Picture (tube, rainbow, N blue to C red):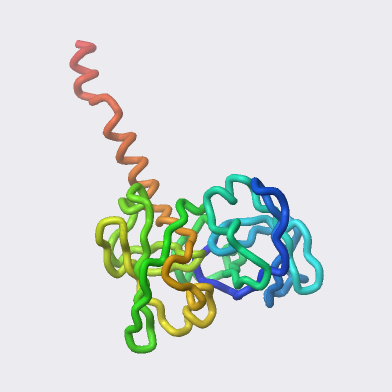
Length: 210
């Protein structure tokens, strides 16, 4: 579990493997000596497991499912990546609860300056839009953002200078792919409501028994 507050802007040192899976090595300013083998790290919002660490780098396997559902397959050496270590009981939840399980790869549609900030417009799959609400949370490349507007299959988020400077979104251009994860709570609410509506009416059952 993560919070969507990026801790480090790492850099891809190497990425290799087959079209269905890969091993990615990232150079990071995180304290590598305190990162354990088997620890979870969110890379552009995708939860990966550290398998090797060496000096200032960490390496992780990227499964076929992760390659299909994220933009990690598009990464090249020297590309920046957003990094966040997993949530602990001592960590402030400055964003919102993030699983690191990417729902969909969306696209940056436009970037409009607004003072020192930038208004980003994103496009995603219609099925994901039902989980987005104005002033609600969404995870974009692992970054916890607030949704400021919704229209069809598009939504907008405002990014402050700090976020632009310390995350990959400061490097993005229109057309770029981004990993999207909807709010976990919205998914659970939908699931519970759909199951409750599918249950038979208890009063009707009691009447049948009479």
